[in-house]
Length: 471
Image 1 (cartoon, rainbow, N blue to C red):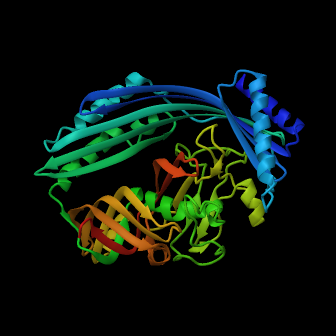
Image 2: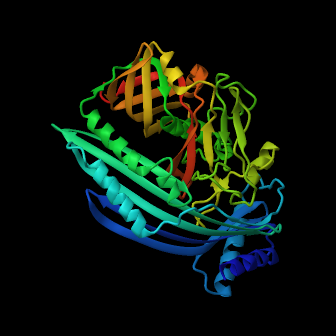
C-alpha cells in the first residue's frame, strides 16, 4: 500500500506541473534497551512508516512528508503543498536547480543478515557484558545500550527509477566508569554495523571490548596527564576514524564546499582548491558506500544513484567531493551517490557514507619503533572543529608516551590539536592495517538530521600538539 501511494504521488506531481519528483516510502522497526549496573533501565520499541515527497518545479525544491498515509485525499494535499512551496521559492531563487543526469534503476536489494537479533539474545549478551565490565573493583558504573533496527525503503522517481532496499542495523554502546578518591575516568566504545548479531559477536566481539574498556578505565585512575608539546603522534584506527570524519569527510561534502551549509554547519577551507596539493603524498582519502557491514553500506543513495567508491584525496592532492545531482551539475561532474536522509520526514542531504584514510605499507608496530619521542593516541572521544574545518582539537580516551620506539606510561585526559594543512603535510607513514568504525550520531542540516555512517583507516603518523585538560 505504501509503495502504491509513492507511485501515485509521482504521477500526481507531474500532472500538477512538477518538472521532477521523487518519493521515499519507508517502514522502520526498532527494538532496544538500556542496561545500567546490572539493571534494565528501560526497553524501547518503535515502528513507523511514511512518505517523503520531493518535488522540483520552476527550478526550486518543494518537500512534504506524510506519516502513515491513509487516503488519496491526504496524498493529493501533500503533493499540492510541495508544489506550492516549490513555486513560491522559485520566485526569489536566483540560480535555478538543475539535475545532473543519472541512470534510472529498477532493483531490489536485501542486505546480508546472518543472524537476526532477538531481544532475548541481546539482553543475555548485555548482561554478560555488564558482568565483565563490573568485575574490577574500581568500576562504579556500567552502561550498555543495545538496539536492532529494520528498515524497508522504496524509492521511485519521475524518470523511471523503482528501487527497494531492506537492511538491518545492530548497534551496541558500551561504557565503563572507574572512580577513586574523587577522580572518575570513563572509557566507551560503539560496536555493530549493517547486519545482525554477527556484527557484534564476530571479530569485534563485544565481550572482549567490554573487558578492554573496563581495564582501561581502571588503569586511567592511576595515569598522569600529558604536558603540552608539539610532537610526533601515532594515531590508532579508532581515533583516525573521528579525524577522518571531522576534517576530511565533512569538508568534502559539496554543499559545504559551495557555502550552502555555512549558516548552521560550516564550510570547507579548501573550497576552490580541487587539483591542489593539501597534504603529504601519504594522504589518500576515500568515501566508500560499498564497504560491507559498515553503517554506511548501501547500493543506492536517496536520489537513486548507484553507490560508488569516491576518491577525495590522492597522494596529497584534493581530487574530488561528495556530490548530489544538483551540486554535480554546478561542478560539471557526475553525481556520486552521496545523498541521504535520516528518514522519510527529511529532505536528503549530502552525507558521507564511509570516509576513510587509505592504508599504507608500514606494520603498525614499525610506526612506533621509528619514533624517538612522541605519543600513541588511542580511541576517539570529543571533537572541536572550527566552521571551515581548518583548526581542530580532538580528545582521545587514552594515550601512551613513546620513548625510543617503545610505548611507556599511560596518560589520561589527552587532547590532540592542529590545523588541517599543517597536519596533513606532516603525515609521513600509514599502517598496513585498516579498520572501519561505526559512527551513529553525526548531525547536519536544519532541521537537524542525525545520521549513521562508517569512518576509519589505518594507524597513521604525523605531528600535532598534545596536551591534557587543564595543563
